[in-house]
Amino acid sequence: MLSPLEWEAIALSLRVAFWAVLVSLPLAVAVAWLLARASFPGRSLVDAIVHTPLVIPPVAIGYILLLLFGRTGPIGVWLDSWFGITLVFTWEGASLAAAVVSFPLMVRAIRLSIDALDPGLEQAARTLGAGPVWTFFTISLPLIWPGVLAGVVLAFARCLGEFGATITFASNIPGETRTLPLALYTLIEVPGQEGGAMRLMVISVVIAVLALLASEVLARRVRARLDGARA
Image (cartoon, rainbow, N blue to C red):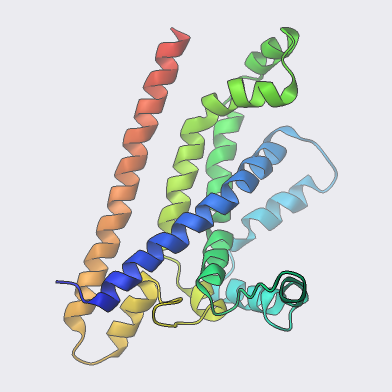
């Protein structure tokens, strides 16, 4: 059986991952659409910046967030003075760290789906009088939905496994920022806690596999529904 602290770490990880994905999803769709369809100076630079979290150490990402959103950082001071919001050493900060690390995976999956979308379908809707916003929500978004769903699940799974940026920016506070990976790390460091570490390791693997299976099942159902609608 899991201890209350282990259940607490699991629940916190799910909450952190949920809010990280939910808040970053609209921005990921907008950025993916911009990179896939728009042509503007500096597009390659924007693309590189978006995908930077994939290639730099997560600890470095956490340190950058600490410099920007810490109590003396430029954004952190502004959030505290104007809104009374403090992100460092909080579960909201852990969500921010997880969102930054997982954001490129979401953008990439959505962008691949947008690249596969036939622009002729959107042009046909435009010729029938539909505006850009209406065309996006009624034509484009339903067709790219499998890619959006895949990006969401990949990002969610990545958030559940985030360690380096979280421990650097949000620390390892029991009940506040000690997510599943941090709890596993803590148990490994304590002699005699091999059983608890093994339980959390198994749970981590099971959650990740279930998330990927759910993504595949949902994506197949969405594709089948879209194929049926086209027929």
